Image 1 (tube, rainbow, N blue to C red):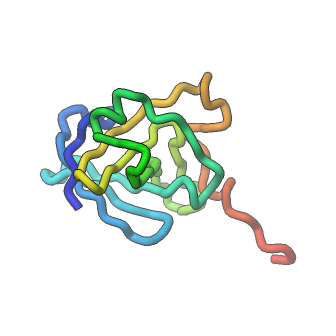
Image 2 (cartoon, rainbow, N blue to C red):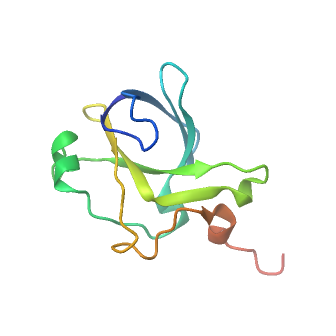
Image 3 (cartoon, one colour):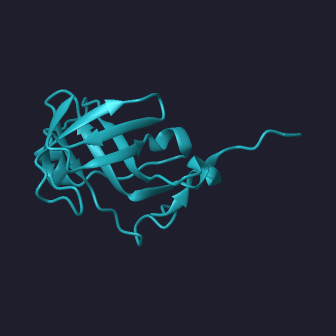
Length: 131
């Protein structure tokens, strides 16, 4: 699905639209129509307890209200071994499927000390007992 970016993606301020393609319950792929942006995304709620306050300006930009059903993803920096891939929990992407708008939020480490920007996937995978 194609989304209009209402707040830029850090480092890709010139990208105005992105395609969001779900791979499975955990992973999605985001790309720009011109191919200049390709990112792996992860649903943070599959990995851990994750909540934050959406700033008022983002609520206004994405036309969110109390009934809005948004999708939230975090950028994954892929590594050769998938378990070593790193997740940035401090810069979530918010997608509003109702009006096809999206934005990235930069969270402060001071406000969210439990969120990292280089947490590995393996730190959230539960090991099987006896494995």
